[in-house]
Length: 321
Image 1: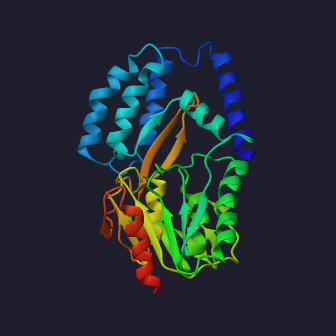
Image 2 (image 1 turned 180 degrees about the vertical axis):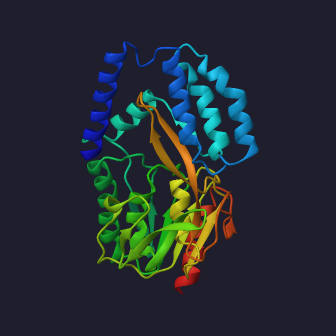
């Protein structure tokens, strides 16, 4: 709710400013120029912003963008600039895109939640992608997964498969909260900028802290000591890759399937004055051993789609025998 109030306050402040200046939010001239300046200023925090490539891209694109008739006309060019500043994991999300995601995860909205199926002592935890930010949606996603795991734990006497094959990313921290009972205690995955690493820390099956802030923690008291296979594909991306990296270096954990999408970096959402969001890559993913990632996660056991599920089951069975 605090986020909503803050966003409402910014909208009201913008409306008052526009009323005093006599300009429209999407007008040309100075309004577009200041919008472009603000967006480029945010991009300077990107992981590739301090490069000649980005400086040259700005020099080429800035005059043309500032000459656009409307703010909306700058979106495509700014999105391309964001990709230079932060890499392929960065882009500009239009106000319509932002609204669409908010509607999908509003209270009472329907979206996929984690599920568990069990056969022959091996349980498969399927983690779908999740874009939600609102507390009700986050809690529904995380609690659905953890409750399903609790229900399956008694009949899971061999091990677990975490299926990330169809997970294209979103909000990593609810996903990590679901997977946390399968993780060893300690710093499990981090986001690195320069020499500073912000860690996600797990204790007794709960997430104590993450780079996402205090409201991303989850309760402990439910921990599972068992072999784990991570099922991945070329669709597995971003937040889903963070979950997979959290298991890197953990004994009895193995990745099975195909290499992931390679968006192994951390993003920040920077809100622009018209409600658009600059999704900017500012960090690299790092695992518990200190390895820094920048590209696809290569599976320990590479298997094509189809046989990959049975290969994951075999990998778990081998480790529980």
